[in-house]
Image 1 (cartoon, rainbow, N blue to C red):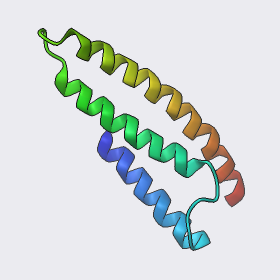
Image 2: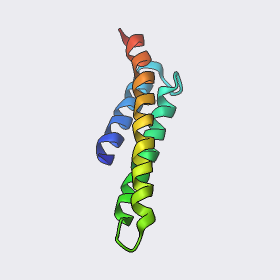
Image 3: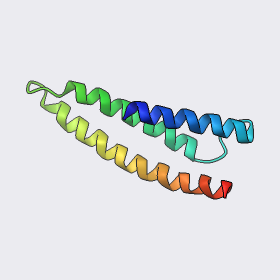
Length: 86
């Protein structure tokens, strides 16, 4: 999942630079960077889950809940980006 998110971010950055010449034309870039951070944090927290670390499972679940809401945010901001191209 982290690889897919990084791939989508790189495609978006290349497409935006190719179309506009620079970045930062909407909240979608910030939303994408938040997704990358939450995905990396979720991946890291999944490696910490162990019977001797009960906090790790709770942390991982909360990271995934935050990732869900961040995905909603990136979806909403992405809708605006799509409307610019149509």
